[in-house]
Image (cartoon, rainbow, N blue to C red; front, side, top):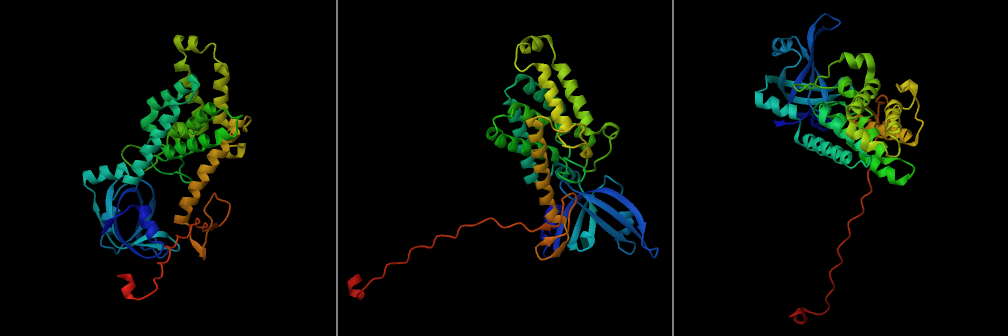
Length: 361
């Protein structure tokens, strides 16, 4: 059997059953029973990009072994995977075994394609930060990446709705920076330095709210994240980093810069506070500058494109080319239109030769 990721299995199982192996971490193990009182065990399984639920009935040969599994255990699940209409991805005729140390290390590193993408995204964030023209915003960004980079690289973009995976915040931030770089030149009134800094810091509070540990894919809960939320933490973090940068040397170098340093700080804080757009979505203030409005739309665009991408994998089909709604998207999903492919040019016909064979010799 091929070793696949949960996402690869999910895609393949849309059309037919898939024989495969998958390496996963046990996210949760819960003892349950049916309405008739028959006991079973429900395992939450996770890898770097996806999750599934495995229901283990009491008459399964591996029931006792699965019942003994605790959250954090690493296993291989091998069997026949199907996309169940009601329960989503499910497994049949399966067995499990514990993972060896090297297999655990490889699993935590993520699949090669995701690993390469997140490295490229991380490098892109660093490059764009170094290219910020305003020395105050550039120094602030570089200080943030240097002090909190490792934590940043293990943080999810959200708990469930978008980029909800280890390293998802890196992917989300890098893509938002790419959009900002494309949009900035189209609107000369935008301060691109400020907008890029806003992208970098808009979700920095999620380093506590959505952080994943070095040893797994289970997103825990942090007291600071629960009590303050990522917007408030982000405001506090930027102010803390800003104070650290206020050395005598920097104060002298920045004293004559335009705009004034205090104005730069306040506008960056506004971007963080306003990036959810409206109070009902968690922002304490509505966007009141062009950069704040642009940041709100760029954030929403990338988050929703990710929701569509994941939605087509997990949504239940309800009609031909139509899928059930995946919240928080506003309605049922419809299969997207394929991209136009220009027809291949036909080779010119061979020239006709008149006369007999003797004329060809």
